[in-house]
Image (tube, rainbow, N blue to C red):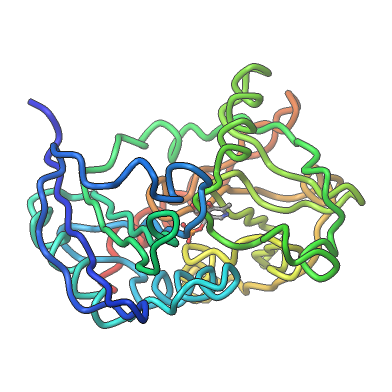
Length: 291
Ligand code: PLP
């Protein structure tokens, strides 16, 4: 049986304000070939996990959606309309323990003033192996200095844009090297993020993650984990990290909305310790989030 798929189109007026949403058929063509989403990757998106019908970290995702839109000078997405659209899709996926909804806002059809918006939802893949056994990670130079977001904001470092071809290429390079995922490093040697995930490291009783100011996406999963950290006797802290900090860490994870917390079991072929108990606690917490 094929996975259930659901789609809504978010409609806009000529001022770029969202006016509402309508259900649409995901099996029919809905986006024009001249939409700059297709021709230039000119738009922004979010992927929100849905746990048994509950959108998780919805407000944080919609805030980041708006932040990305601002970075691209796109119209501000109306949080009420988009939240309503996501909840409608989440309701349709309520029979599934794990699902996801992707929201997309593009600059629209070339030469026309209307943005294009849609939200699409389906069930998640099975990430039990990654969450339990862990993932092999390789470090990849992103080729940008850690201050690129400040010196060159037009590079859109840290915006969740539709131009993810580079992130996909990094994932393929990781696979070529026999690994499951990549972790980007700035050209001046600071750990950044995965192509679709945030780095979290445990050092003693601290959970550490690199600052968004390095031109990385502020992760919603990481924020929720840091809020829960005291329940596990831990304290979250944002700080710069180097590859040797990763080698010396007690444990590390790549965390993200749909895969949740994937413990890192090796870096560039060198084995690293997995904290199985904390990984299970993190993933249990992430799966059960009601907001
Ligand atoms: N960094 C990048 C580049 C991402 O694409 C993602 C998510 O897809 C993340 C980090 C993790 O963000 P979140 O935890 O909000 O899913």
